[in-house]
Amino acid sequence: MKNILAPDILKSEKDLAKLAYGENYLDRVEAALNYNTPGFILEVLAEDKHWMVRTAVARNIKLSSGFLEKLTKDEDKIVAASAARNICAPVKALEALLHDEDMWVRISLASNILLTQKMMEKLSRDKEDLVRTSVAENKNTPAPILEALSEDKSYYVRESVAANKNTPSYVLRKMIFDKSKKVRWALAFNCNVTFDILEKLFRDEDEELRSALAANINTLLTNMGKTSVESKALCLS
Image (cartoon, rainbow, N blue to C red; front, side):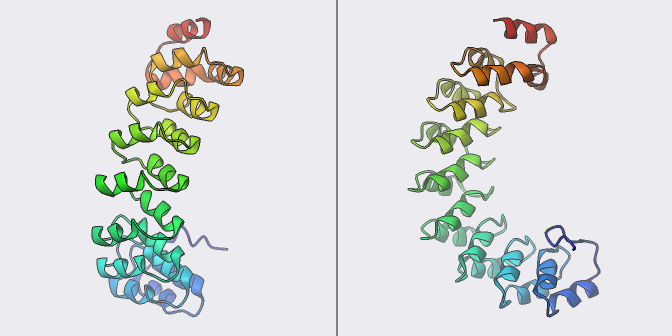
């Protein structure tokens, strides 16, 4: 069975057109995902009767902004959620989704790496934990928002902040003594964790965490550019 989620971008326009106008919706999905599919065909697919086809084309960054905006308003929320994640969706359309009643639409919106800081701030105060978690996972979330989320009431959110490789070290340091061990585990294996943070985590009350750190210390310190001597000193501290 072919993998329609990884379409062959080298297909000719003739082959793509054949797929796009085919009776099998999976063929139309394949055409909808392909970046080489001509714009006018993508627009046809954006109005397809099958929700999976519209969901697929909503992911395509080559779809025109007008049709992307239309898909953010699709009656099927799965389609709207797919469009919300598209980095080429118009800002005005994305702003309208900030208040969407469907949680999954807002979760997808929060994962969009090109959201404005104002939109991220709004979503970081969403009533749903999973929406705030999506903001915390976003690689482009600004440091001030990550800092605020590092004190979120939900450990899911804090865990995502601790795992985000773009969370500043001064924020990570504040999380060393987080009450949730899952947060501290995420912190310990953040690729950008600093040496001083690791030192403190080696004294963590969770024995399993200390053991895991000891087993992976060479890899962790290599990523930080530390030497084997410093690795041994940390293990013995």
